[in-house]
Amino acid sequence: MKADRNRQKLALQGGLKAVGAMEGKGKPKIGAEEFLSVAARFGLSKKSLSQIRKIVAKEEWGVGPYFANYYSDLKETMVQAYEREARKLFGTKFAIGVSSGTGALHCAFVAAGVGPGKEVICSAIGFFATAAAVVISKGVPVFCDVDESLHMDPAKIEALITDRTVAIAVTHVMGGVANMPAIMAIARKHKLMVIEDCAQSCAASIKGRYAGTYGDIGCFSISAYKIVGGGEGGLIIMNDQRLWDRAQGMAEGGGLWRPDRFGPPRYEGELFCGTNYRMSELEAAVDVVQIRKSTAVVKRFNAVKQRVCGRLKTYREITPQKSNDVNGEVGYMLRFFPETIELGERIVTALRAEGVNCGMRGKNAPPDWHVYHDMMPLKSKAGATTPDCSFYCRQYTERGGKVRFDRGTCPVADDLFDRVITVGLNQWMSARDCQNMALGINKVLSAYCAEDQKGAAWC
Ligand SMILES: Cc1ncc(COP(=O)(O)O)c(C=O)c1O
Image 1 (spheres, rainbow, N blue to C red):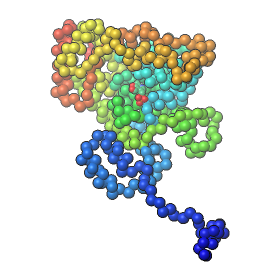
Image 2: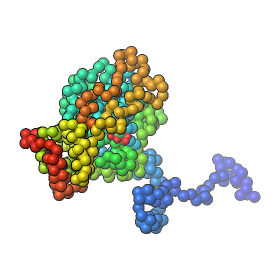
Image 3: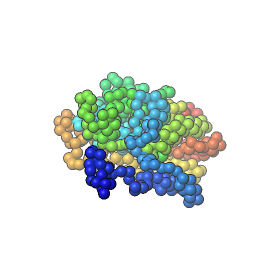
Image 4: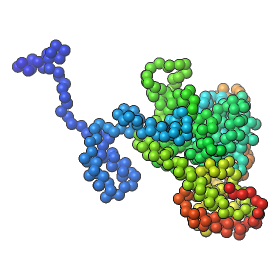
């Protein structure tokens, strides 16, 4: 009776608490099954999985671990470790781990002030994601032609600068590097921001300095398709605190990352409506290791390319792709231009017969979103909503903006992209593999072209 009365009495007045320790026993949200699911997705054998199951059955899983950057009792989350490794590698003050390269570019363009009525000069050859990120930032991409390096031609930039231009977005293409010193000189002269898209050339360098550290912001895709990356991830690097604030604001819900996360702005313009490009802990756990390996990967690729190139003969009808830094580029592709597409077709067929993995786009090729005039959503000026702000808003049209994306706008890119022969290289090729590949290329080129001792060197 007394116990009953005590239960009825308010705890505040000395009664028993209504809710004491819970009896229900829960299971961790993320535990052995999830862990094994990851292992299964990775393709571990049934035998390995059952061995792991036995081991993890003895693990104390607690409540977590969650695969999110927040709510972790770790001293340093995997995402933070990944960002620390990136800062160390590139020597920048700031690094932000994000969920994709496209997300990185979107954050970078917003940080750089791209918006309605503003133009960004982009590389004619690269990938659609760069220009698309300009458009989703409400800006307009304007394509700059390339030179024989297949990178943005610094000599063509100034003619494209208008009073609407706010930034240059340079893409380092397929393991190569752009001529950053020349591009930076133009950008600084015209007070333009520079965003480097290093998705295809992570940890490459130009004159001893990493691609991504010349401009104001460096963006990377750290995805499975790139030379470093495990699944889907991205990275943004920069030195400027304000740019970091803005990029971080865009990547994390406008300001969720701040010490006073739901508080008012600490300075004018600090807070705006951002999105969520947060990186998962699961991805970061892989990429923190991947990024540490990046310099060794580049070194291996570069050595392979130089080993093959060093053995190649020169020919009158063949122009090797120009390199903006033979020693700093990744070089996972060997590229050259035959005089004509017809000659290129014969060379590709013969090279394949020799066992050399290669390709050329040629005439009447299907669209490829790595070249500006094939980027369908841009050609149709399509945004996710209509009428789309980027191309049809007053801020743009009333200031004279009328961009075009038709073939013919960048004639050098049009020509070279169709006729470039690309030979795939592998970082694990041995000295003999390189020798055999060079032998195959020399054999085929000698059959179809005239040797020219004075021709441009391959590397
Ligand atoms: C040059 C370039 N920029 C951006 C991206 C987009 O990266 P993600 O696929 O991680 O969004 C890619 C991906 O292929 C790329 O090649």
